[in-house]
Image (cartoon, rainbow, N blue to C red; front, side):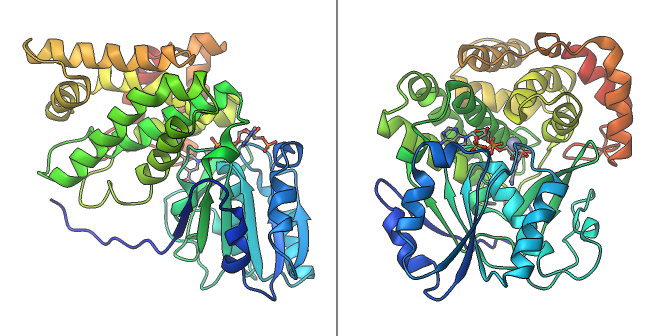
Length: 385
Ligand code: NZQ
Ligand code: ZN
């Protein structure tokens, strides 16, 4: 096992009818800025319920954070936070709202050019404080509710933001708040969770048995409940399992002490930035192609994945790997998500633009060992057509 630091201070409140706990979680005299997206939380009553559970606080609202939150939009909220001396931020929404709110938290306390907070190389943002934030999750996918990362869009690139000050103080995970999600967003969430897990698991072995078995547990759970939670949106148990898997896949636990890849995410972010394809869908397109191209490098872990996650036994190892990749693709397709670039109208002539974007965003040596060059990214994109 590799050496690691594990730190995660986020208080999780999980379950039905837990919004009333906001009243104890948010400081009593706080000036609270509630942030949200394009309106789903208004339409389905979540925002009203949140406000009802914050008696006595001075409440401000900032709506309109778009999927793939834009720097310019977030800077408008920063103006409000500064002008009104906001001392608590409450994100009500999915990954985009939570990520955007982390950026607002940092930028509101930063005196320099806020573009400095966007760090393509995953450095910590140059800040020593942030407005404390909490979240109410309405879309299980990104794990943003229990980590300190965010992805912010600026000038056609998706750029990471990291800080030790952006762990949410608390997150409320009430699976019933996610019942209103459209099927395609639930599928995106299942795939995002699946890929977060394999980015930290299908690398090379370091005898990290707990991390491997926990990752396998998440993957098997997603395979078991995936179709059910899409087809039966109000099936509480199926959805509750998805919500908890999404959080656990990216809160640092399964990634502690193991190599991490993140190639799928880094190339996927460029596809989203350029063509607007949902984050989860870019991952479904890329993962099978990446494994095809990298199957020798990832051989041992792919065999373990085939045996332990898909129960593929009694055939030779090459066939195990082949079948595991095929089963993964079929799983995504059965969730209603297409797995080829051409399904989204992205043709071969666009690959040059994607390679240029990867270069511009410093994505020239990806993977768990840093050996994945732009040439290999091109091979992957060609395979994903
Ligand atoms: O904007 P509203 O009207 O709220 O609608 C949203 C949005 O259109 C809708 N939605 C959310 N909850 C709903 C709902 N509709 C009905 N009922 C509900 N309960 O869903 C749409 C998508 O929301 P979004 O927040 O964009 O999706 P997701 O949670 O998948 O977040 C994606 C963003 O997270 C980033 C991605 O890059 C992308 O920008 N990521 C963040 C990570 C992190 N912080 O650790 C890691 C991830 O890998 C990812 O990169
Ligand atoms: Zn993701």
